[in-house]
Length: 316
Image (cartoon, rainbow, N blue to C red):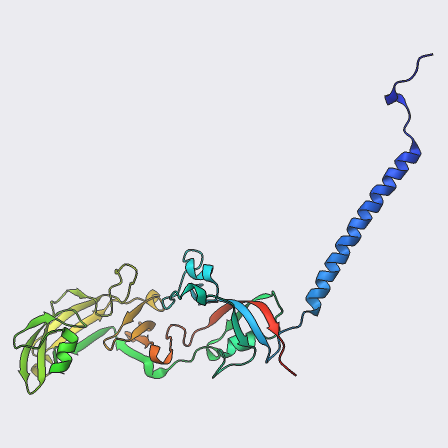
């Protein structure tokens, strides 16, 4: 009688049952471990204290305008990346070591604190949580109405100007000699000194009609585009009681609002704040660095992406 091959032997049912039981035990153990871990993480999240008013909070943030442009951040790689994080007109890089988590007191706004919407926006958040906080204009940076200037799209300006001799030299860099012809310190067109007496220098504007000037800065300047074109439409030497008048047109469009900054005749930086096509007027909003006033952010809705790093509860 021939002996059967090994492959022909019937499987041992006892061994098969043992293998199934072992696999089931291993699978059950893995499920138990996963459930315990998940439960512990959920419990940890649930038990992490929420930020309360008066707590000391350390956080990272990215501040954006409504169009997504970044105006401030505490994160170095965000500050350095202009492709993923395009910047606002007023954004400026700081030293690398200044980019670090920001510490503040939750709920503390006004003098010694942050803006109201930011201070209140972190309340209720937890460590490692990220949230977008919307700050409405009334809870953000106020508008200083004395820094708003309304202008006409088409202006008629005097063609004669008088400065003290000291002011003339300061603005033009030369003494105001009679019949001197130099470019105007702001408008850019040429002027000619017509009188120099008693410490006063009077000069007449000599613009070229149908010529474009860039008094507020040149939008084509690499790395620092500013201002807009101003076109001279007319020059009347007899206007303004014989002092002469110049008619200029500001070449501004609706889409330029909030996208153009410039430098006004007083040396202050401003932002194009509004355009009223119906009344042919526009508004520039000046900044004042001496008081820390940033016109680009004032009166606007702001968005802060906030991530809580740590929370130190206030003392009872």
